[in-house]
Amino acid sequence: MHPFRRAVEAGDIAALEALFAEDAVFTSPVVFKPYEGKAITAAIVRGAARVFQDIRYVRETVSTDGRDHALMFKATVDGLQVHGCDFLHLDDNGLIDDLTVMVRPLSAAKAVAEAMGAQFDQIQREAFGAETAAAEPR
Image (cartoon, rainbow, N blue to C red; front, side, top):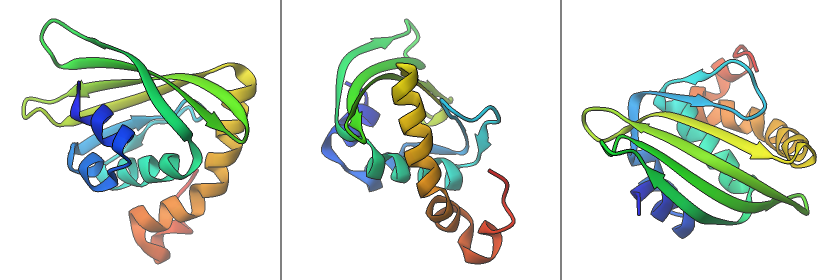
């Protein structure tokens, strides 16, 4: 079991943040442009922890070299069942340098987009501080 999965299932946000490389990139299921850097990636993961309820992983697949992981999950967002997958890539130090999340069905993706959108001001403050958050694009 990958430590990311273990931390998510335990709700251990500090352990999750420690798994990200400084140059981590987060690719959202609902926003086209990836977010770059550990600060914003960690802040988005904290926001997701506030939005996704009852998250549980149902399958984990690992590449032969151990650097790519696909973690399929089920969760609830605003009363809708979400099926998704966290795709992780590990750098040479074993830290996550790429996290891509995909969710389905469309109704759940819309609920995720709305719920995460409501979190975004707080996510930006957590990642960049109050002064820069207002200037950061969504």
